[in-house]
Amino acid sequence: MSGVRRTVAGIQAGTRSFIREPFTVVLLVVLPALSIQIYGVSMGQFPEVGFFQTTASLKTTGQITGAVFATGALAGVLGLFQMISARTADRRLAMCGFHGIGLVGARFATVAAASVVVSVVATISVTVLVDGSVEAPIGVFLGLVLASGIYGLLGIVIGSVLPRELEGSLLLVILADVDNIFASGLFGIKESITRFAPLSHPHNIVTQAVVDGSLATEHLAPAIGHLSLFVLLSIVVYTYQVESGGDA
Image 1 (tube, rainbow, N blue to C red):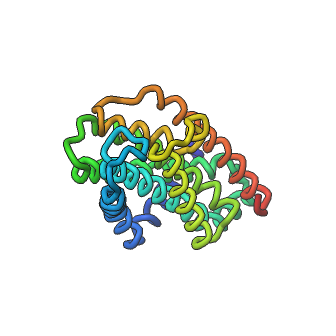
Image 2: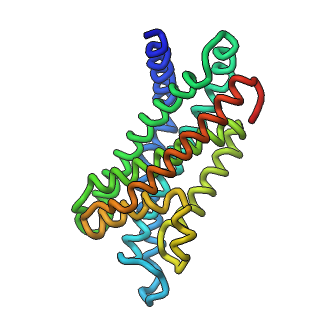
Image 3: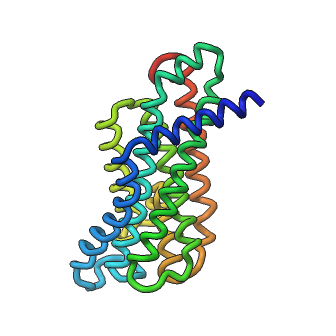
């Protein structure tokens, strides 16, 4: 029971830390919509000449890509900042007898809650801003929550090994941007390569939900596989650096 109370206390502390930062809250509300518009307008400027490999219009593909990018990048940065802000406190708790697995569990729960909030905001933005009606908003939310979960965990990993706000944030944004290039399906990159991009399967889930109004069930298992991989990686890296008192 004491372990549950500690976890709940950790979640509450992380949530209060998140809400107390007005700039973070503004980013949460503005970034998905802004990213959807910028990506959509930018991609929509290209002529439809058959060069790009996509099932939707270039503008719609750009809007979907912007939504996935914003969701992943924002969740990743939140995970990164969660780790950096909790780093010293968690090491002191570990010295007092707290287990690293329990500490990282509280961080997981906080990042998961933030990822759900990010995904809800992004889903609303997609439903309102994407051209045409979105027939399967639940599919959009599912794809976005998987994207945010994967990158939230990646933020935990990067925050554990690179505890610097500027460098860590830049790395996450660059990774999310490159990941989206592979995931977007705009270019003739072989699927045997793109399937290893963490955002590839969530992107396909969102695309099918927007374009066809159906759930891309064949992409669920691979996306959950990526999520599980980052869960294990973040547990190993974070518990090591907390319990050892040094950087992984």
